[in-house]
Length: 96
Image 1 (tube, rainbow, N blue to C red):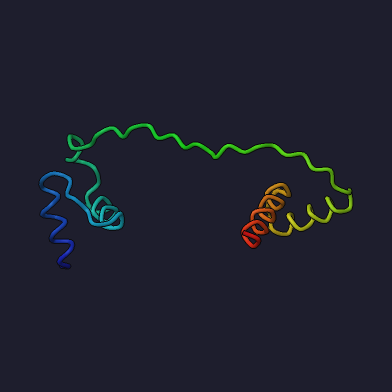
Image 2: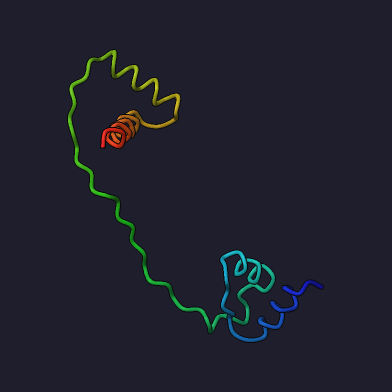
């Protein structure tokens, strides 16, 4: 039997052990499940993610140019407005 497995079984008898990595925790709970540890569980706080605020900008572009941009975006599988934003950021990074 592997050393790690023996160590994990010994830990299973008590409380939830401290883990050095997410991988170690996953292996432990794959082997033992949550039974016997329910009293050690605590409710996690709600987590809220905020998207960066963006400002809407209106550009007047020639129709053929917009069609070319849309075609390029379609090849990449992204919305054309996202592609335009990416190009603007790339250009600004090059000139800064």
